Image (cartoon, rainbow, N blue to C red; front, side, top):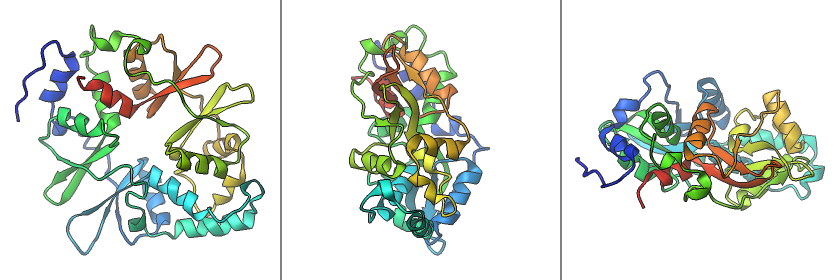
Amino acid sequence: MSFDVIPSAPHWIELLQNTKVKDIIDPSRKTVTASYNQDVKDLLKKLSEAKVLSAVVTDPEKPGVWGFVDVLDLMLCIVEVTKESDDVTKERVENLKWEGQCYSRQMTGYLVNFSSRDPFQTVTLDTPLYEVVQVMAKKVHRVAVMDGNRVTAILSQSDIANLLATRGTYIGSQMMKSIGDTRLASVGVKSVNENVNTVSVLRFMAENKLRAVPVVDWNGRMVANFSATDLLGLNETNFQLLQLNVKDFLLRMHGFSKPPVVCQTSDSVESVLLRLVVHKVHRVYIVDLGMKPLGVISLTDLMQFLLPQ
């Protein structure tokens, strides 16, 4: 397929039009696959070993693919298995252990697009990246790269950001503008206090359809980011950690406190792109001089920004 370069379009448009999926696929990156009838326990082990956030679910007895399971699906499954607790602030450890067993024994196929927010989309090795960005701008976080009925790779929004960050295509373009002067900056973000019970935070995220949320102290200053990704190491052996407040949960899961990746409205779009790539994160929070969160810029926002209006 050929494209006509849009007059006065940013330099990255031509790059995306002329670069195909096969040009940026990393052959060393493992694509995790799981059978639909495998336990979540086995799925979690595979994701942890490969250090990835999603898996392709297949039926070993039939050709084709069922779809993706990702960390958001896992998060909403956790919310589902803990929904019977009347008062999460007084959750009993033994009850959480039982719920952890229920979570680990869920069938992987049951969780395919459990969130109903990330449909299974496919591309080929010869698909131009511009078409991929058009799909990802619709809040699709990853696509499956197909060869017939076989998935050969998974391409994510991060891969597109990495490409742009390693090329000089944004120099002298809209990437140099401050985020406050572009449509990239969105004002308003929901936050949670660091002392709130982790199960309550998960329910809050599910109710508000959030993948992540800034964690703030009593003064409203952002101290951490909590996302569905932070649940990746959660299994039946440590499920009781959900009784902790979100600050302590993050410390126990990671062993240290990860500082949030932030920016201010005066920062350039280019600097936000580089922070997304360098820190390997999916969002950068907009804060004021007092570290109070004002908004958030996600990889989806970046995909939308890349397309001409």
